[in-house]
Every structure is written in structure tokens, then in C-alpha cells.
Length: 84
Image (tube, rainbow, N blue to C red; front, side, top):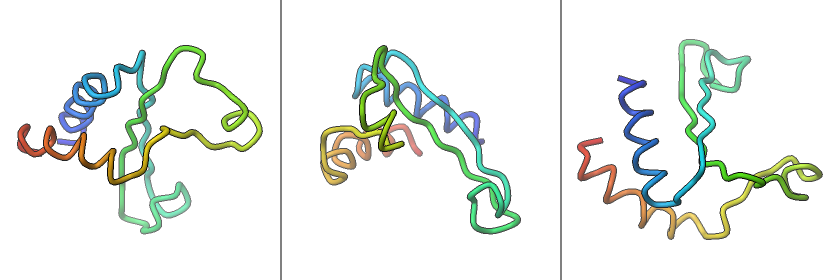
């Protein structure tokens, strides 16, 4: 189920953000950042060629230049129509 969701996220993120690729990663267990020992979660992040900038290299952060409400407004209808 998680892999099917990751594939759906890939299609939607590529459609909305026209990214060149994606980073996909899982957090397993409390020490890995899941917070709860018996928990697993998945990250799917859009990436673009040459997207490294000062925020990535110095601030150790990545940004999409829009607020979360805008992101939600773009992504939520597509996930909902996909049955996710």
C-alpha cells in the first residue's frame, strides 16, 4: 500500500510541480525520526536539476516558494480524486 501511495504521489507531484525527479525515503522506528517505535512513514519530495542553493547547502533546508495552504489547494483535490 505504501509503494502504491508513493507511485501516486510521484504522478501527482510531477503533474503539479513539473519536477525533474523525486527523493523517496522511509523513516522506520523512533530513532529514525518516526517518533513511535512501531511506526513507519514515507517522504516523497520533488527535486529539480540544479536545485541546490544556499538554503540547501548552508541552511540545510529545502523550500518551495509557496505557503502550505497553496500547496494543499494544489495537491489535495488530486489525491482525493485518486482515492487516496
